[in-house]
Image (cartoon, rainbow, N blue to C red):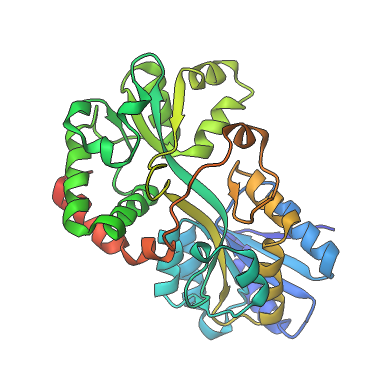
Length: 341
């Protein structure tokens, strides 16, 4: 089975023809901001199981949201897939999603991974963890996110810009747990402890620890796994200089974010869209969905990548991920006030 993959250049054609064919019960139009080759396995397996043909449009999350808004009631979009609760929240605020009530999703997915009104659902977990230089740092010194603001770590922390959605969601979680005032104190403390001005992506933060540019960094776990499993021997060697900490194991647990999806507000194939979301919660789909980017599945008992197995189980923050989106605007304001650029 071949997935129909559509570029932005032919999206207008897709929109017009998809509307004309919207009555076809065996089609599903997916707008996806995920760009992993393994996701094609999801679509192929879904078609093989259900007979429903998948039409795929890939793009940047903001671009896809804008397209759905422009298309309006005539939008062919049935499902939108993206990453991070902050982006899901933005789509929610723009009216991209409609509510879904599904016993399958309610039973299969943890409550923390479900929007309270069923507007979107999380299907893979991304842990934002702490990395440290094995030669220079005692990991007991930094057991929590809160420890990153300790003045003893002045000049030691590498972390991305405040424009990064992952950092916005991390601060949003601090707001939920501590309130805005205390979260702002924490953010100021991290700024004071930065080894350099924020720059680069998550991989750059980890490599900064390996090179000695900083002793401690914050990044999503899968960037580290990419280095550990790289075909490039030098990248593997750099990763071996770095240790990983899952913070806050003695209290609320490690902050996790999501790769998620929702049914589009004007989905012409609503039943197929719900069926696809339910499929993403199956054991088979969970393995594919998470393995494409070394993510953690959200359904208990699903097989993990070998590296993740070696890490064993860890306690995750059970804060409903919708809170990360709700607190996103305040997180951005705090970043601005403390000078986190």
